Image: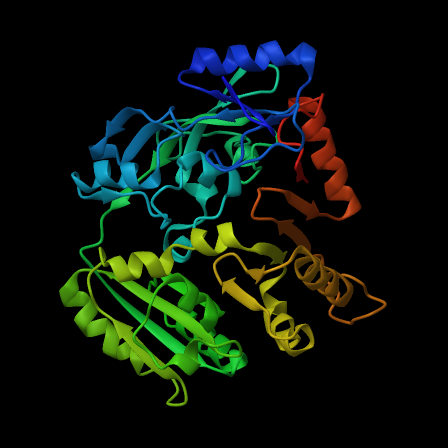
Length: 401
C-alpha cells in the first residue's frame, strides 16, 4: 500500500486480495474509490483507492463462439492486440490506456454503438465484488444465456457505485476488412440532423452516425480540412461504413448522393485500422479533459433540443442517434451546470414549455465526480438499490445517482 498527502492506494493483484480488502473495510467504513483506475482522487485523505490495473489477465477466449473472459484491469489496447490475431475485435474505440473497468463504469461505448449497440449489450456477464466483500456472478459466458432479469445491466454504467466489476465476459465481433469514413460540415446543425435522419431511413447499416461540434474534432485529431470548419459554430456529422472493400465501393457513392450540396464533405479512406480514424473515434480524450453534461431525452425532441443552442452560446457537443443522448463539453463546472439547468427547465417543466417530457441530466468532472438528476420515482428505486448493495455508502462517494 502506498500513501501520499491526499489518498491511500491499494494495488489489487487477485480476487482474494480484493474481497479481503472490502471485508476489512466493513467495520472501518472508509470511502472506497475505484473509478478511473489510474486517475481517481478520493474525496478526503481517509479514502482508500483500489487500483485494479494489475487485474489484467485473459481468463478464457473461445474464438469460435466469439466470447472472451478477462479481468477488467486490462487496457482496451491490450485486449485489441490479442483479438486482432484471431480476426476479432471488441467494438469500442478508446484511447490506448483506457481499461475495461473504466469502460464498464462509464457505460459509454463510443461512436460504434450505432452498429454494435451500447456497452451493456456487449457485456454478457460479470463477477462483481460488493462493498461487504461478497462475490456476485451475473449473466453468463455465452450470448443469450440469461433468463429473467439481467443484473449485469445494473452494474454497467453505475461508475462503481453499486459494486466493483473485476471480471467480464465479452461479446466479440469479426474484425471489419475495411472502412470508409465521411465527415459532413455545416453551420446549419438542423441540416446535418436532417441528413442524419435521412441516412437512418435508407436501411444501410452504418457503423457510426455521430453529430458533433467541429472544434471537438480539431482538439482530438489533426484533419486536413479548412480551419473555419473546425471553429465554434460549425458542426460535423461523422458517417462510417465498415465491411468488405468491394461492397463499400458500391455503397459509398450511393450514400454520398443523399447529401445536400450545401454540406462540405471530407472523405477518409485509410482502412479500418487507420490511426486517423482511431483518433477520430477516441471519445475518451474529450471525456477526460472536460466537464460534461449528459442530456438523455426522447429522440422526438432532439430537433427542439438543438434549436436552443444559440441561447447557450453554442457549446461544444456530440449527439449519438443510437442512444438519443446529447453530451456537452465545458471548460468550467459552472457552465456545465448552467447547461443542464437550462434543459431541465426547458423540457421537464410543463409550466415553461409545451415540449414537456421526462429527461435525465447528469454531470461529470475530469476528476471523476458524477451526479445524475432523476425524477422522484426513479430516485427512490436507485436509493433502494444502493441500500441493498452498499448500505454504508462506502463505494465511490463522489458519484451520486
